[in-house]
Image 1 (cartoon, rainbow, N blue to C red):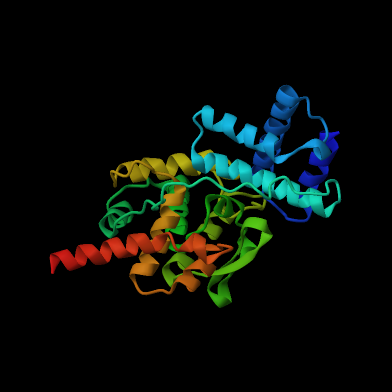
Image 2 (image 1 turned 180 degrees about the vertical axis):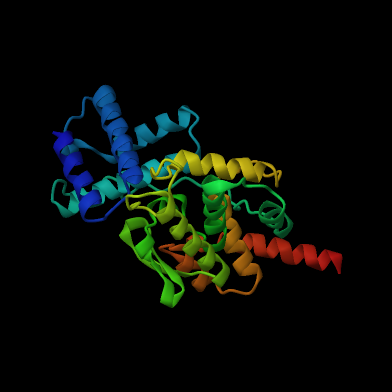
Amino acid sequence: MNTSYVSKFLQYLRYEKRYSPLTHLAYEKNLADFFAYLLGTYTVEDVKQIKHIHIRSWLASLKEAKQTATTINRKQSVLRSFFKYALTQEWIIKNPMNTLRALRTPERIPNFLKDEETNFIFEELSFGDGFKGFTDRLILELLYQTGMRRAEVLALKDQQIEWSLHHIRVIGKGNKERLIPISPLLEEQMQAYIKEKKRLFEDPIPYFFALENGQQVYAGYVYRLVKKHLSAATSLKKKSPHVMRHTFATQLLNNGANLQAIKDLLGHSSLASTQIYTHNHISKLKDIHKKN
């Protein structure tokens, strides 16, 4: 019985909410784990039978399994979305999530590169010659100069670049569009890259970035690329593509951009998500004050 409910909910996420395949997969797995727990522990088979005590029990089992508060909250958020949808569809008459609250999590301060570290990456490190080196450098430049998410960079197509307006039309989470301006130098590099693709490959490449064999650049490639170059430049423990996005936002704030503008450029749905960067800004001001 629950399978059909979940299937309808997942279709809603995919076709109406336009969630990305990765987000869709995460929701599907979390819901499968939750309903498997209910069936195995309480023999609950129908969504109408689920009460808040069942959900509390599942969340407690996650805590016992040493899952972090952040992970548990993310899974709780999946349930919250599911039961909210179930209520609108009249599958249930009362939302069992109403009395449940998110766990407190440690304050998260984003990792970002210092100016000298970004300078080292783009001025001192070698990216190699040829098309691969061109691709690698431009991926890093785009992540750093636009704050785009890895998935957004991978999905980027030539036609999303509006040359006359000097910006990229980015398709973000939930299929939301936002405009990100690009510098004349970055624009010049991107135009040169498109020309190089046309010279190397007879058939049109559907996506902006391509591997040497003409195939689309994939997530693991970008992750390894970023990790390799960040490892040479910084002692940060985390060396993921998201560090470049954090660096983009932090540098904007430190250079006087207002929080609302940064929110719009990052594609955040709420200002609360953007406010994490104020901690980095305050830390920098304190350092400057100490030096004076």
